Amino acid sequence: MPNPDTSSLFRPFTIRSLELKNRIVMAPMTRLFAPEGVPGPANADYYRRRAEGRAGLLLSEGTVIDRPASRNDGGIPFFHGDAALRGWKNVIDAVHGAGGRMGPQIWHTGATRYINNWEPDAPVESPSGLNAPSEARGVAMTEEDIADSVAAFAKAAADAKRLGFDTVEIHGAHGYLIDQFFWSGTNLRTDRYGGPTIKERSRFAGEIISAVREAVGPDFPIIMRVSQWKQQDFSVRLAETPAEMETWLLPLVEAGVDILHVSQRRFWEPEFPEIDGESGLNGAGWAKKVTGAATIAVGSVGLDNDVTASAFVGKGSTTASIDHLIDRMDRNEFDLIAVGRALLTDPNWVAKVENGDHAELKGFDPATLSELA
Image (tube, rainbow, N blue to C red; front, side):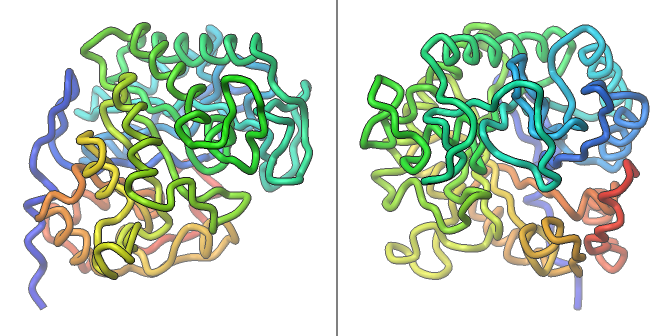
């Protein structure tokens, strides 16, 4: 069988100051290889290899802002402090040296636990002292805590620009802090950061985006990752209709987001099949339609199962066709596609697709989780 025409994946893409040679993004993937929160030479080499493998844009693993208890594992890197920022400067220099483009993903893990139950030195914080509905953990944030967190996100973004990164991604998905504000099950606040509607519960995110835009200026692109699903509950939906999705996401775009990175576990699944059928638009497609913003889709690209059925439980994945991806890219359903586990196992995955070496593509090997290869 002949290889599919992949030219739609290898069109240039430009937004604000960001110019990409293709539409393939390395998805952010937590690696836990930053002792004391500081990335070292092995981290720089890890990202450099993906840039050499022709990924158009690299998004770093989640890196935490300068707040107490902002991470849920001791191996997660900081994006604050002189030592960590020197490490990230080495990373971006290595990526640029290989011809790549990169942005750090900045986050706060909120009240979530990681799989090893590591505990921070300070109490974890969240909108209402909850990790999930009826699951108390940590403390509810005061308005001062919220203001300090907004400022910490803005400072991290400004540092990303100062160090020479090409963009920045704000993590607002998967049940972490910003997403805990979005989610009615974990945001029970009665002040201006809570409320019965997703639009009201998005105030915290909107303030972060506005502060980040002010910190980085008008030309530096801002990406925001969002998701319906939460690690606490895969079935959660923040928006049950396109109209509700618009009230959630459009204010974020109006506040300064240039690209919405819409996380799904399987990119080919329709977001609202009751409207446009089983082959309908995915989450990124609908986000683009209701906001007009550029979008990144993600979820099990080139693999036969999703992250919750493999990486989360230490199992592998075999290769799968990318024909459905190409079909959606051909019709411009979304602008960019993020690839995670396939690039984790094979740094040259993008180059192989571009060169037509599809028979050489590899599946996901969970052994690669234990090293920065």
